[in-house]
Image (cartoon, rainbow, N blue to C red; front, side):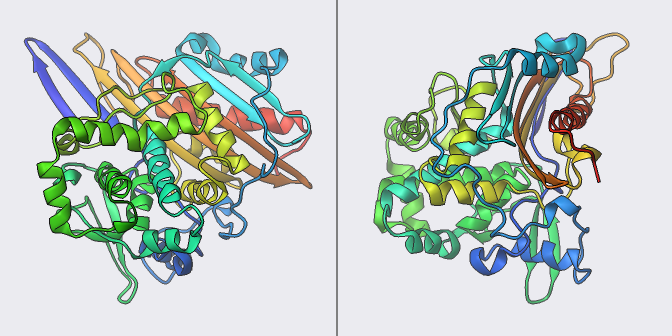
Length: 426
C-alpha cells in the first residue's frame, strides 16, 4: 500500500511494505495435505513443468522435515551473553543505536547462547504483525475444537472464502494457480476471488498480501464469535458486520487478536497488532490501538513456537510451515550465504520521506522514518553440525537502503555463527 500525502510545500511518502511479491512459503510437497494450489504450482515450476523459478538448496525440505526443534524443552530466554552480544553489536557498526537485535543460537540445545541489544526498543514492525493475525486464527481454532485436529484441518482446507470489501485495497500480487490447466495468474486480490482459509493464510504470509491478511482477520473474528457454527454464509457475514455495534466489533477484535498474546505469555504492552492491514478493514472494524513489537518479544514468540507451546503443538507446527520459504528470498533472507540453509522468514517495513536538498526518496531509504524489521529462523547442516539459530532485527537507519543493510547483516551473522561452531561452508 503506497500513499502520497502533500502537506503545504512538503512531500511525504509513507509506504507500508512487507515481502516482495515473489516470496513463497510452505514446503513444496504440501498440496496433498493442505490443498494450497500455489504450493503445487511452485513444485511443478521447480520441476520445469509449469511457469516459475527453481528453488535454492535450502528450500527443498519436505513437510515432514519442517518441524519443531525444541519440543518438550520448556525453555526461557537465557540471560544475554556479554561476549556474544559484543560480537553481534560490532556487526552493526556506527549505527548500532538505530537497531534492536536479538540472536538465539540453538545449535547446542544444552548450551544456548543469547545476544540482545536494545531488545526492549519498541516500534511498528509492519507486516511482521501478520504473525499475530495468524496467532489469533490458530487460537480461535484451538478454542473451538481443542481435541479435534481433523476438524481444524478440515476448516482450513475446506472453508472457501470469497474476497469482499475487507480486502480493499492492496498492491501485493498473489499467485492463483489452476492445478488442472497449470495456468498461473499473478495479480492483486479482487472482489469475488475465492480460496480456502489455508490459501488465504498462505497468501498472507508468503507474499504478505494485505488483502489476504484482512480476510484472515475477518474470518478469525467470525470463528471467535460463531464458534462451531463457523463457517457461515456470505449473507450472514454481511449482516453480522453491518448490524453489530462498532464498540462490540472492537471488543471482538481485541478478544480475537489481543487476548491470545497474553494467554501465550507475551506482554501486550510490548507486542500487539492494533488494526486491520487494509484501509477498508480499518473502516469496518476499529481495532482500538497501535501496532508494535520489540526484538525481545518477537524472539519469545519464535521460542514458544519452536517449543510447540504457541497455542499448542499442532498450531506451532503449522505456523512454522507457513513461514518456510520456498522461493525468491529478499532482505535479510536474500543473503547468498543462506542459499543452502532452510530459512523461515517474515519481514515488514515502513518508511517516510520529506523534501531534502540532495536527497532522493526511494524504497527503504526514508529520511524521516526508515523502519525495517526481520524475523528469521536459520537451519543448516554442515560437516555433521546442525546449525540452528533465530534472529530478530528491528532497525531505523535513515537515508540508507535498509533492505541491503539487512541482507549484509544476514551474511555477517551466519558467518559468525559458523565461526563459533568451527564449521566452513561446503
